[in-house]
Image (cartoon, rainbow, N blue to C red):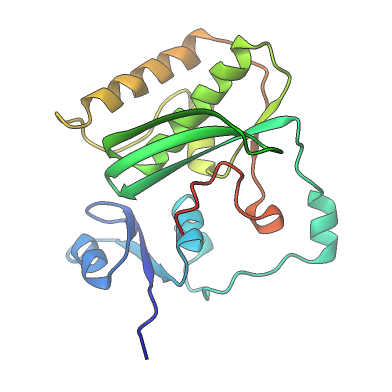
Length: 211
């Protein structure tokens, strides 16, 4: 019987990220004091966990708790007068791209990348700022959805909190980060940034579908 694929989230280690083998994960945590890591059966669960907090997953099983009818009723349906953004990274760091789509039709509104030596969190941050600028230019009253709490937090602080180091391969990406931060500091916007409720609504419409 074939061994089932597992995905390993490293929140704290030599190089935080999502890894597809225990050996790769072990290399990031071995000898690292206070390492935080956990395995997941599906990539979408690992991605969600990586964008969340280790404390929410420590000691818990991998099975996702289903929402009750009361919780689903409280959350309600998505606001389709909106756009949704997401990013994808092949490796962490690795080739990264991001996009924004119309939430209802899933029509692509913008896409950037792939960029060398990027991370998913950077992509989520850039996607949000791109989306904010996109809506401001059009004087749109639409809201913007993201499934990344980390990126939403970075945008609110007007600062990309990545620990990735700049190098020759990702110099262009760091230029975009600087431009995004400057845009946030120089522009006022009223666009609500809303967390996409994945457990209630499924994957965000801008998802690249790489599961």
